[in-house]
Image 1 (tube, one colour):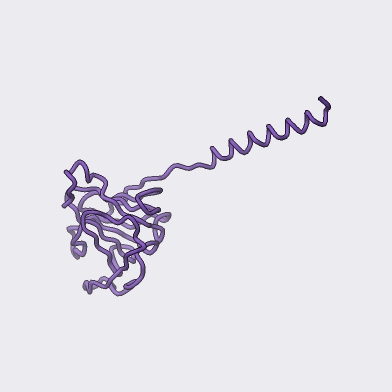
Image 2: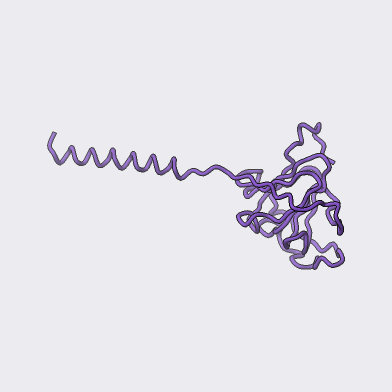
Length: 160
């Protein structure tokens, strides 16, 4: 084998190794962040369902409420004005929920709720314990796509 062929083979093998290691290094795991900042029982109480997302930080602006099942894809839903006093509840009314939420509340008493970056409950996640609310993290604000009750099975398929 000539020196030219040997150098070409070494270059191909080296390139393949670099690509393979780059692919492994480039894969990142999803992050999970608990955003429990306030109690949902503190006035004003706006979240009357298991999961609420708000257009603005601090549970302000237009609201989206969902019962116990979560939402596979928030792109099918819109924020609405619930006319809550002192909440600027018209801000964001009519906007799609997906990629437009800034804060959330978990009105459930027995299920942890999770807000995911991708539809179907995948990717980075912000987590709220029962009866808690919080502002979405900087990586999730205006970048959320689905919500899910996490302890559905351990609560016999029912969150309240």
